[in-house]
Image (tube, rainbow, N blue to C red; front, side, top):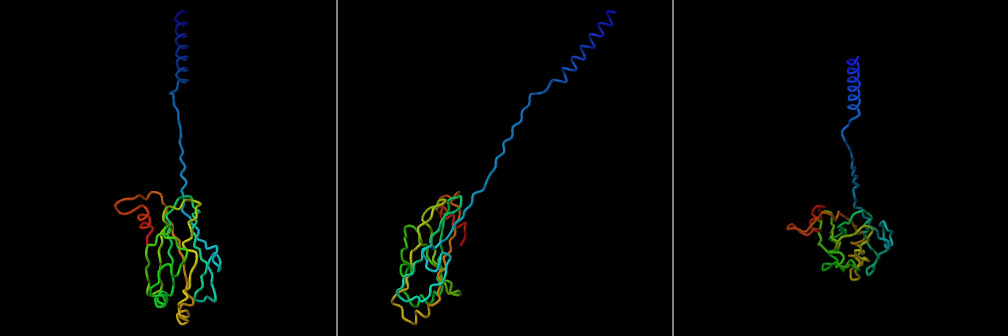
Length: 204
C-alpha cells in the first residue's frame, strides 16, 4: 500500500513539474521604430505683374524711340527649400542692336537694375540665332516664400536711334528664364563658393 502511495505521489509530482514546465517562458520584448522621410522640393515662379502686355508675356505695339516700358521680372520661392536662383535674359536681333547701339551697356536697355541684388555674370552671343543672353545670379539664398527684388523695372528704347534702325529692331523679343537649384549641401571649397558649385551642378 505504501508503495502504491509513493508511486502515486511521484506520478503527481511529475505531472506538476510537467505542468510547471509548460508555463515557463523567456522574458522577451519587441520594439519597432518606423522613420518616414518626406522629400523637400525647389519650386519658383517668375512673374511680371506690372508689364503692360500681361504677367505671362505679351506684345507691346507702336513702340517709339525714347519709350520706357515697365517690365519687372520677379522670382518667388514657392518651394519647401531655400534655393540659389539665376536669371537669363535673352534679347533677339542682337546684331541690329549692336549696329544701332555700338556702345550699349546694361543700363542702356534696362533701367532699375540693382547690381547689389543681382550679380551680372556676363553675356554670350549666338550669331546663328542672332541673340544675346545676359546672365544674372541672385546675390544670396532665396528662402521659402521669399520674393527677390525685380531684376529690372523697365525696358528703355533709346531715343537716339534712327528710323531705319528702329525699323530693323521692330519685332525684337526679350525672353527671361529663371532657374533655381537647392541651396542645401553646397559648401565653399577649393573648387569655388557654395553658389558657384551649385550653378556648376545646375549646368550651363
